[in-house]
Image (cartoon, rainbow, N blue to C red):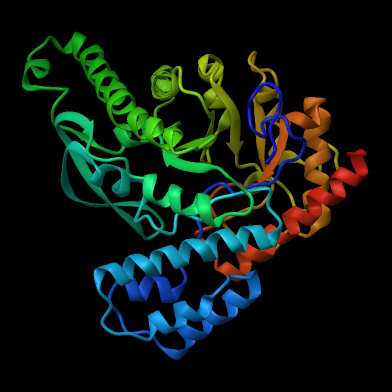
Length: 396
C-alpha cells in the first residue's frame, strides 16, 4: 500500500496509473442479469477473459451461467463475478490503482437516485449518441435512503490486489440532471420578471447544495467508514452552465468538507478554459482527472505543435492549492490503439509544463465503457507501457 507522510494516498506519486471509471459489461453479464438466454459464444467469452486476466475459479462462473433461469441471488452473484473480471482486467494491464468498471451498477445517475429519497421518476431522456437514462424530479426533501456503494466497495476491498479508487456521481451532476418540482415554485413564478432569474438561480443552489449535504456526503461518510481512502466525484454536468461554476465548486466543497479521505474529481469533455477561475475555490480537490487525448494529434513529439490537446494544462498547474492532474492520454471515442510511444510523449510534455512529475498521473480521457474489452485492454496495456517508457526517459 502506497502512502505518504501527509496522509494523502498516492496524490504525490509520480506518474501513477489508474482508470477513470466505467468499463463495458461483457455479454454474459448483461444477458444473464437481464434474464436472456446465453449462447456458447457468451460462455466462451467468460472462459477466455477469465484465463486472459487471471480470474481465479472462473470455472464456477461458467457453471452458474449454465443454469436457467437465474434467481435474484444468482444474478447478484453474476454481478460480483463481473466485478472480479473488471478488477483483474485492470490489474492485469498493470494499473497502479483500480476499481471494477462499475460492473455492479446500472447507470451513474439512476443508481444514485434509486437509493435516495425525495425523487420521482419522470421517464427516459437521451444523454448522448443513442444512450438514454431515466430522469427523475425532485419533489420532496432530499435524503439518502441507504448507502449505495458500500456493498460493492466491501466486496472489492477483499478482491483487489492493487489499491482502490471509488468513483461516484457528484452532487452538481445529480442536481443538474434532475427536474426541479420543489425548489422553484409557483410563488417564484409570481415575482417580477426582473427578479425571476435570481430566484431561479437561488432555487438551483438550494437543490444542488441539498444533494451535496443530504445525499452525497452521507454516502461518502459511509464509504470512509468502510476504509475507502480515495474517492473520485464524477461531474459530467460540471460545465453545463458556465455561469454556475461557483455552484459547482460549492457543491464539491459541501460534499467533502471535513471528511478524512483523498478527494478528486473527473471533468468530462468540455472547453476546460470555462472552469477557470471558478475551480480556484475547490481547495479540497487533490486531483483533477481530465480528458486531453480526444483533442490531441497522433503525431509523436513533445513540442507545442505536436501536443495541441494539452495547451490548457498550465491552468491546472497554476491553481493555488497545487492539485495533481490526471492526464488523459487515451481517446475513449475511438478504437485506435495508442502506441506506447505516443503515450510516452504526452507525459513528458505535461511534466515539463508542471515542472514536477509528482503532480502528473496517467489515465484514459474518461471511462472506457464505449469500447469493447479487447480494445480497452489493449489501450490500457499500452498506457502502462508508455508510462514505463516515460519514467525511464525522465529518470524516475
